[in-house]
Length: 318
Image 1 (cartoon, rainbow, N blue to C red):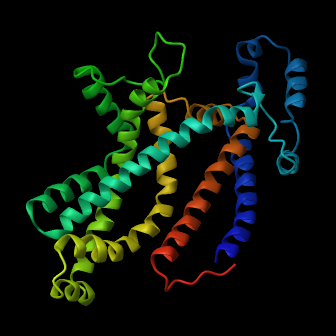
Image 2 (image 1 turned 30 degrees about the vertical axis):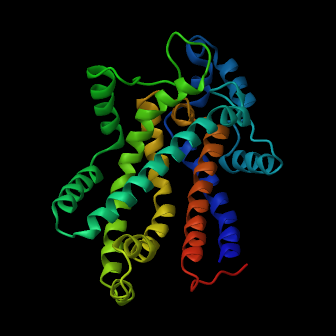
Image 3 (image 1 turned 90 degrees about the horizontal axis):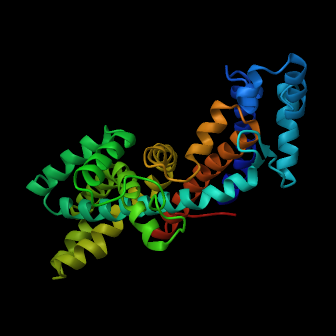
């Protein structure tokens, strides 16, 4: 299964990169004008044509895509026309902060979703179950950027207990662990809470179903403690559906991370993605799209692997 997924990823990434170039070519934005900026308003047509040739955007769509793909396979992702630096450097400078935000948010969503799901499943229909389920269904419909703006208004502006955005304090030119941690709280919490409803609902349903199964009833009949029955038997069985959810939430996590990064001015890849799209920066846009696609494919593979580890009955081949 893992081997088939790896082989399947190769043509998928190829099609995705071609699709990026095709969509960018059909975009109304002109990469030459975006690159030239205000200087392009007074530049002659000859200069603009020369700049178009230098950027390689005068070539046919297939030729541009093929040149980028062959160079990328050799380790050269090209240069970003909007950032004025190599694409590899653009990604290296920003990817770590995006990974930190997404990983922290994912951990928050999984831990809170699992804990609340187990507590709610103990007494289905109880006050805790009804309250948390109502909040979860409400959060499902709440956009991540709206939650971010609400968090900024309440915690940064009204209570003034957390910074509203950025990576460090405005007066500081040194990145310290304490400043990063304090600036990470709000964006990570908002992104994590936006993902929490699905983990909570899956765990709640899975554990509630497991508690009604014969093996769990047998464990209770043998006199095992409620904690052992709940965590050692029901939770293990109830987490199986949630493991498949991890991979399926990766696309939503990436989309949410881009919105949250923008709202909180987090120095990840969100700003680079927006600039690459609006400036039709082919090289940077293709590289970022490949990374996002690869993350989705790896998330699906991780779900299969975790499911196999949790359930020995699932077989894996090369």
